Image 1 (cartoon, rainbow, N blue to C red):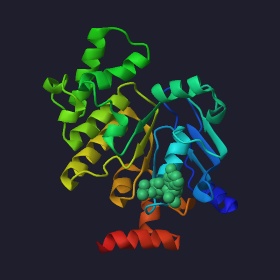
Image 2 (tube, helix red, strand yellow):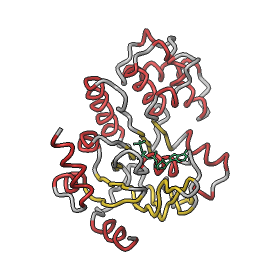
Image 3 (tube, rainbow, N blue to C red):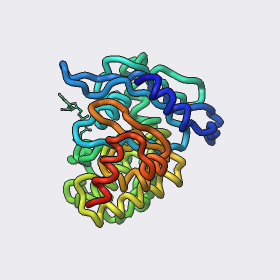
Image 4 (cartoon, helix red, strand yellow):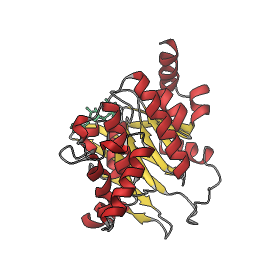
Length: 278
Ligand SMILES: Nc1ncnc2c1ncn2[C@@H]1O[C@H](COP(=O)(O)OP(=O)(O)OP(=O)(O)O)[C@@H](O)[C@H]1O
């Protein structure tokens, strides 16, 4: 299995893009990552590289381990085994070896996590403006006018009227809450964004608009992202590369169009054909 994954990784590896900050090589390198819940496998033996500016999609049916993998990488659940190396430009750092304050600082600055349910990623008791401004304050920004200006700017970028700045997220629709969560996450200019079913649970028309917005922001900001979804249309639109998971393991990986148009693994063929038949 490991050999197969190594082969997949080297086969789909593209020349290293050079990031704006001059960093070369993968932004993130995951190796042998595993998380068990008692005897049950959450995910196991997962390895991949993520290059600067690249969007990686993780697909698979319910229970295949997508969310566990995403949270294990992002440090929201503790992995049992494996390594996660992150390179912000000064050389790779083993994330699992960071102290808790260092890891939290990484999550507040370089990394961001967009939850499927905006309630998990927003503070529902404070205003939209405070939700967006908070991450700037966490990065040391203290100037009220500048924080308010940045919050207004980001509300506009996610298509929320500036007049809603002082409203609480509970007064927003589901789609607006998700856009606010995205603004809250992107305002601090993270390099790496984790997204767990970012369009899940929304009406189809709202999903399409949100997907367009995410795609535009990812391209405009040159973000690297890992996007978990069970929706192949989402990865088709967003992801450069794809990993297909089944029973906690990666069964296929490659360029998105290649995997979707010419799936090698029987399980991926089933996933693709079941979608096409809908
Ligand atoms: N907190 C938990 N406690 C025990 N088992 C868990 C827990 N979270 C996930 N699991 C199990 O780990 C496996 C992978 O679950 P996970 O939620 O990562 O899959 P998923 O692909 O994200 O599914 P979905 O698309 O439904 O969210 C499943 O067998 C699940 O039952």
